[in-house]
Length: 589
Image 1: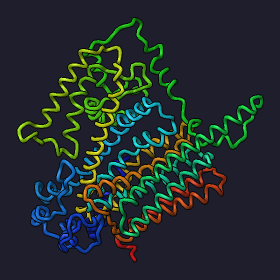
Image 2: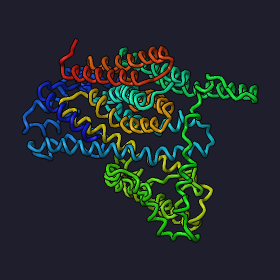
Image 3: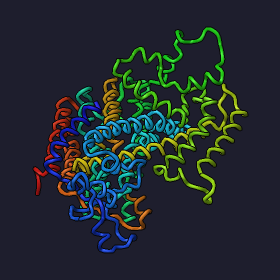
Image 4: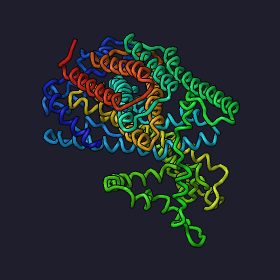
């Protein structure tokens, strides 16, 4: 699925990009030439008028491109382990550029796999364990920790894009593009797969908050500047959303309890209380089923036994469930074979705490190994390896100090614990796993942004169109499949709630934290200048889709049928055609 999407887009882009040459300017050469100091307003997106622009590399001959990349500051990406522009134009001969682009797209797919695996297998479970340890209610955990887990790739990608002026368009394009994709394609497929009646109050609440976030973002783009106070206010909108969810759920549960106590002898409960604010009614009861499957009499040992330390280590590093393997299709098996080496490497580096298991997933040899590998990975991957060669007082490498401390701590825990019983401080491993997975997701997101920047330069595509297509699709396709699967299992309300609740979190924290971190870094306000008509097409389309849903769904008495699903898919197809025609200059002001 990923390969078909990306290869088709590549062929289309190569064909159109050669003729159009429609790049965007991503650097502040005009500001630098005017002699503005670093504490003045930061420009994140500039119009196409600078002479110092990395996009112009394709206007030079093949022999001069390497020198242009070396001498143009705009072509230097501080984040990312690999300088892709230098690799394509300086290390490889010009006749291998198509091969280099193909390999980069394969590498991009692999980075999306890393993002998805790290978020789903390690980041989310550890966040769930943290929320369970803190005894948070389900609705609070859902709109905070679990929302962060589900939206981690989008948020870290946006923060990485906002860290550089010439890639800020990726953040805007990705967040708006993912918003349109999720609210039209994902929601439309859910309605097609399982027509249902949506919970009215939660749906209206989420759409209103999301419309408010989109409108606020539109105002920032239209005004062209945002201050620190406005950024904090923007972030506080999510706090208001969380409080609204908590209060509305509390009120609903109280009303439902009052009705149940007053009509204990009546079997019928008013219909309005079947359409609830709480998602608990929609949550599939999977825990008991999974445990029952795991401990089926067929798989229980005849005699009790205890595994040796080496057996525990080897079994913990095996990501393949043999029972599941026999039931799955050959496509799943092929993908699992590709992902298995990566999963093994991640299992070696990131601890996972599972509060649903009796031993909370305590694996003594592997968890002791995590005390060595996890801090080392954090040092080597944080800020794309910026601290990998750091020397303490110019003499002692930081990574060696972390390695020695990890060995010492690992030896102590190995000697003071047993294989059978987790220690009291085992929940701290969830915090360690959360930190390591967050660092890896951030590093992979920075690499994705750097790679997309290179593709935009080579294919003469703007950052906005790359954001609303490649980056938005890559971060949202996993959510699309999972939500459709949930709907097919008979829980469409939970799927539609995930569609709107997650993108509210992603936009408010993606834009808000991205702007806030850049302000702290530069000690200045941020100034936005749109990348032309495409930005307004993107913002207007997202706003229009939300307004139409806000009007049409209540008119249909909150029933999402197949007609509504077809309408949403058609809307996205029309939007994508208009956006691409605008990018290639066929539609202009």
